[in-house]
Amino acid sequence: MEDIRVGHGFDVHEIAPGLPMWLGGISIDSPDGFVAHSDGDVAIHALCDALLGALALGDIGHHFPDTSDEWAGIDSKILLEKVVEMVRAQGYLISNVDITIALQRPKIAPYIPQMRECLASIMGISSARVSVKATTTENLGFVGRGEGCEVWASALVCR
Ligand code: MG
Image: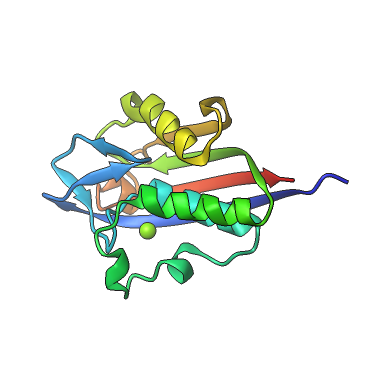
């Protein structure tokens, strides 16, 4: 039987004024950005956890602890590269991923094609296999108040 495995990831980052905002590997034009030990790319962090989860390899905090200076301010694309290497080392291929970003502002829909291309190239798969979706929370909750961003990700891997 073909070995197909699914993983799920979730992450949240706080938003604060004057910080860079990276999402899905792309720099977002915004007066606010994410509070983080790394570059705060909450979409890549959720994606990494989905890929790690598919193979029961723990989570991003285990592999790249935020107590380590090694990962301070790191470009999250490098973390994703390392996770993709872990998936390949286990003999698996990434079939597809699906990411949902909940952010009140700015509107990120215009950036989605770039995010899909960027993430696909890091994972070595077609952008047709990389879904990125965006939603607001209709001004409800901490996302709606502009205090944070939540991301959910799913990943399917097979060998
Ligand atoms: Mg994170």
